[in-house]
Length: 331
Image (cartoon, rainbow, N blue to C red; front, side, top):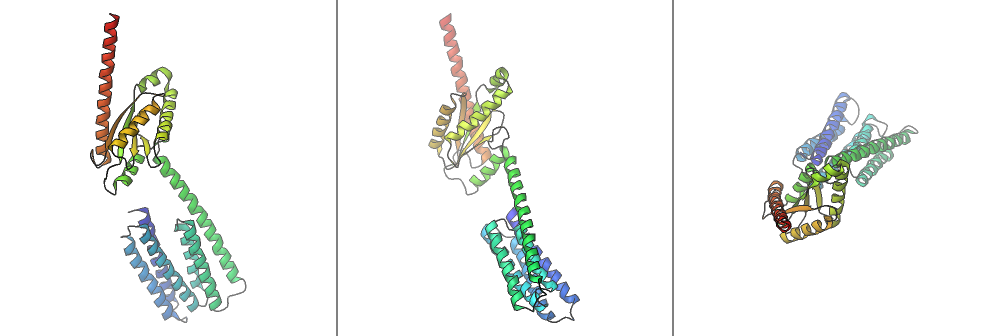
């Protein structure tokens, strides 16, 4: 279940629970005026909450999530207004429905502008009930409004602070701490996004392996090796487009993801990366393009890795021939 669906389900469930509490309140005060009207209103709210919970389990888009939540909010405001007017106005216990609604909206509405719009609607409805209903004690409306504004401010601030922290944690969980490139988890998340609409020509993957990286660590130390890795990622990013990405999946192994790139574009980018990194280090590159080389991340990685291996073999044989030719000349 997605986060959006969970949030919508929670909204509907709390909607149902709050109206169930209001129904119990009416049943315990049946001797008071207007209870049949209030029971009918709160009963409709309870049914709407149950129905919303059922719909929430089938929500598949952000648009439908907002529609469900907005509909439940409007129903809640109408029911709260009817209940408060029937129970004696804004000074009645039923007016607490406005407070709980305002707090919930501040705590669970992710978009700031949408949250502010809902809060204005809630406070405006409360003021409308204050004007239309029986007079409240002097200062009551002011204290109620001030209290709601304080609660909304506190809840909204805390909610957005927690959202920022969760966002930062998600980002850290998807990034390689040394180079800032994606890690395996980040690469998998990006692949799910790229492959979810089906494979057309692209995306393409480039598997990069730094040649003789172990010698850098052995001769110059691990600090020099770490610095080289960071410089490789920075230089590679200069070649890539905005929608492309680089991931570090091993010690000196990288994967470049090219969105909407065919085979020719992948080879061209691989050549540019090799040329860009040449002043820093020698690199071997293997390429693969969907759907020709595979329609999943694992299949593309396998195909690109096989080509990378063949590139290294060819370079090894070429190096061996050069050594042999040089040895013969010296003899």
